[in-house]
Image: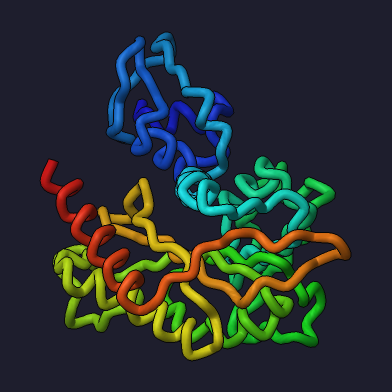
Length: 281
């Protein structure tokens, strides 16, 4: 029997696709040895163990956790915030946000029936399915959030940023995952839809940040994701936001960084260069 099928049948994974995510992430051991091939053959008496970190419903949870960790020393503290999770899917970003103490997450996705039941059932979560992020506005239910996170596919962040800015409150912050494969033209994609050119990766990030600046946002941080996307695409997180606005009386202004154009360019070069070095290890 295939390992992914065994995990699903034993109830360790929600489905075979979830099992495949666990296996490829290195979270599954067979008879004490880590196995990363879903097609690995096991028997009924094979000992299969899953690491504690497999509590996350998707790899996306690890990605956002890494981004929040990178931004924490710079002053980003999400405790008590209301959040829009744009492109929530199975709820990986939402799960990480809950673990970091947010007050409420509005999780929206254009699809249906994807969010893990345990995440959707949390009283701090409102799941809204069949929602095109580009249709969000200041008049939509739940508008006025403190923070926006986004993990979107098959659309450029440059196209959805106006709706995200309109939906969020004045002074809201955004932690957005830039996927170069959806920012560059199809002619720039290599085999398997992977963006291999470091210049194209940099241009993808720069394009999103330029769109953010055009909407009045400031650039605060750029960091590559600790985990690659599907097929090995390198992804990046950008922290952008409006000028700080207090959420309550007596709230002190945080010392958030603000990158000028030169600092932004340097940050992009640093992270893109590091992404190439990591691939060559």
